[in-house]
Amino acid sequence: MSAPAAIASTAPYDGRAAPVEGAVAAYYGSRFWDCSLSRLERWILSFCIASTMALQVQPILHSGIALPLILLMSALCWLTPVTGFFYIACAQFLPFPEGAAYNPAQIGVATWIAVTFLKYRKMDLRGFGYLWPVLPWLLWYWLVSGENIWHFNSEYFKALTYSVIACQQVNAARGNYLKCLLGMCVGTLMATTAFWAYQLGLPVDLSTWGGEREGYARLGGVRADAVMIWPPLLMGCFGTMGVALSAMVSGRFPKQIHWLKILTVVAFFVSVPPLVATMTHGAYAGFALMSIFVALVYARMKRLRLIKKQGAGLTPIVVTLVSVLVLIYLTNAFRTRERVDALYHYFQYSVEEYGGAASRTDVWEYSLKTIIKHPLVGIRFNDDPEDIPAEYFEFGGYLSHNVFLDYGRWTGIPGISAVIFFFLYPLLRLWRRSDNWRFMGFFLFHFALLIFWMSLSFQFYKTFWGFWMLAALVAAREPVAVPARGSGHMRLQL
Image (cartoon, rainbow, N blue to C red):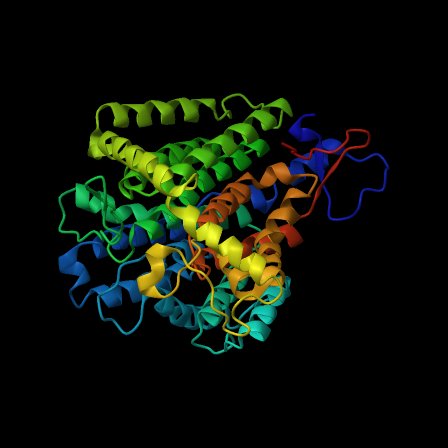
């Protein structure tokens, strides 16, 4: 079945004949698909990209201009929803002067409050109640651990604050949800700026926390280490590709499709070398998994004839990307081939030493043992001791390098179940829709976050909380495409 058979409707389909052509035109002309940037948005994004690059440079970062620049950048971003989501995504790893009283995420909250009341005269939080799936997780954790998670300075409260910010930004977007996601994708791509500033010969102090692997340092950003750099790169690359796929489905904005395809190629080109430089198993494995998922989704979309407009296919992008990546590898540009080969050898050693999940094998196995031993309330209820891997004896404890397993250890099976339910809620809401093919960007971004949560123990990543709120509101508010009479459903099932 072809995409134009879908009809936009805010009411249930009653089985009667419908004016197909008019409804289709209205549906594909809706604000959801519009990714065009206003003049103000273009100016703000250009300024913020240049500012982000400038903040990587030591003379600027360590000067008196750094904090005012971050303050100005965040205030400007809140003027439009797309740049607001840009800031939500990049604030997590935006450099700031060492020893500063406030980091970019905290500065962002203060400027958001000021700009919101100055611009809108009110704080529009309609739909914030859709965050209810977080309550089982937080309430159970609070009951079991007794931790004061509701304190304004707790990490839980800070994370929820970014859900509030995202809710207000979605309401201000007035239906331009795909463009909001695009802004977030561009924001995550700012994690590449430190690497490229360094490659340009600028005085940049890249983080090498985490040591070396096979003689190669694990390069991160200026204030973020390698493990905090590769997740946003996956989100940015594949989220941008997903936005392009969504635009291709509508087929009504050929100019937007063209520049989104170009942006996708640029996103991969600027992201792959710094991603390789992180020398992290999760980065390489995540990139491979995301690539396989995209291939399966695109093949299915082609079979369903969801993308059939001439010139709207993904094949030219893939051919270009593969050619560029192969060229980078063969020419050893940015020492890419050396690093890939070195990490492969290190991975082989890790598998022989630890097991099939390499360095994660021990902590995952011990985490599962703890969950089996303390299935109801975990170890936090009575502060029960647990067996820990030998390499963590000196630290007296460990993290699972997996958010779900951490909460399983701490609060038992009810806790891990509540976290899984919360994480997957907006994804499942979107996937169960008959028109789920519209949300490829959301699926790819969410899948990258799943890889992140499966590999690391960073549940307070502000980008996740902002994206979760955006996805939940989109799932609740976007009208469902009801197929014309006798045409069946257009649901994408792999």
